[in-house]
Length: 123
Image 1 (cartoon, rainbow, N blue to C red):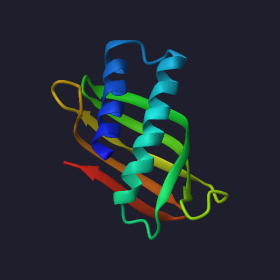
Image 2 (cartoon, helix red, strand yellow):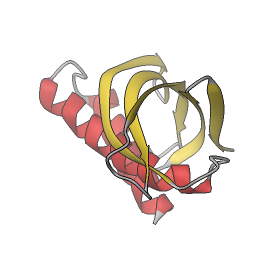
Image 3 (cartoon, rainbow, N blue to C red):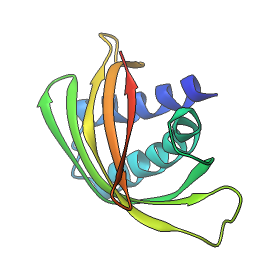
């Protein structure tokens, strides 16, 4: 399941590479794909309990090169055991598209939650 969400997010990034990333629909599309990606990717992290991503806000994507993007966002996370508990967290990192733009060659994302840092990495 994680690979499917990685590929969807990579596709959204790839579209930003080809088209204007300033269009609100493009930004909303990336936010929704990032929300689903994080929900599944957090299950593989070192969080002490299973978490889910409720939303992505204040997303800032900056291209560092045609295939590399720097990301900053505020994300709302909560434990799967109690969906009424939601915390606002900071996420920052870089994503590198593969040469076809259909997946990620690597990514390094740090989620900062209540003073604790959790790394989400590939490659």
